[in-house]
Image 1 (cartoon, rainbow, N blue to C red):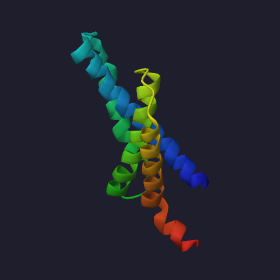
Image 2: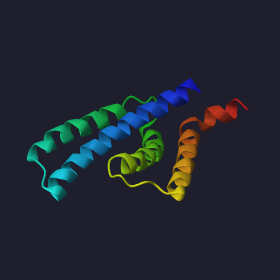
Image 3: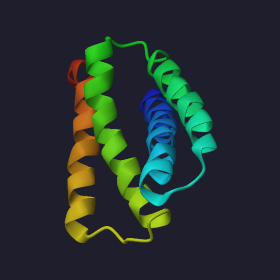
Length: 114
């Protein structure tokens, strides 16, 4: 269980790095904010890539599972940063995605332990 929480935590930090790395250029391009936002954006995306390498599983499995956590973090971002409250169906979808993350990353281990 601790390994699952550690993996999910790492995925959350990874998702934040990716979202920040994409949100800052969005502010520059769509809202006319400072060009200098592109520098921390590039750094954030570099951190995102590095964080993905910290997972011990195969890259394809990590990317697939990461997508589910990214969806969850993106909805929290929608709520906190964009001030748009996710709907009940958003949360149901996130729940399904997070179950998928656990199955992808730990399904073999979970089945072996049954």
